[in-house]
Length: 158
Image 1: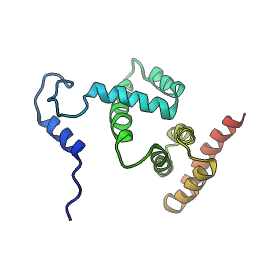
Image 2: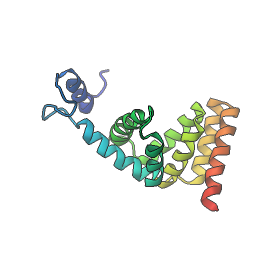
Image 3: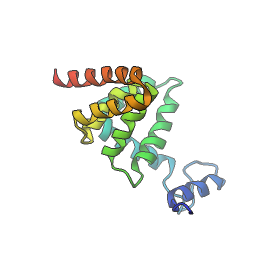
Image 4: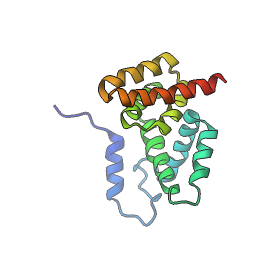
């Protein structure tokens, strides 16, 4: 069975093979430019994670070797992946929580718990996502993640 065509992917593939002196100089049908993805990425990232979160992340990284990865993540993850059709933000947040539990990325998990609440997840759903992940990722990862989740809940209740 042939997988369905993803026209956005085809446009990105076409774009990467075109030669240009500037990353923003693309044929008219090439899809969004890097600056468009950055703009859209910052908008999405701020809507999900909050202005304060994004400002803090960018301020910490500004003028350091980490600054470049902030822009790459903003363009590629927040500008492109978070805005793809097929999944809503609520579903993406739920997936992220499970993946971040698996990765034991608790610093990122805290921000995505808040983002999940912003995107309509309930505390019960977030807790169940961590419990569900424990069966696949192991109890130590889930216990560590639940500690982070509880800290977020407690800070919101304070």
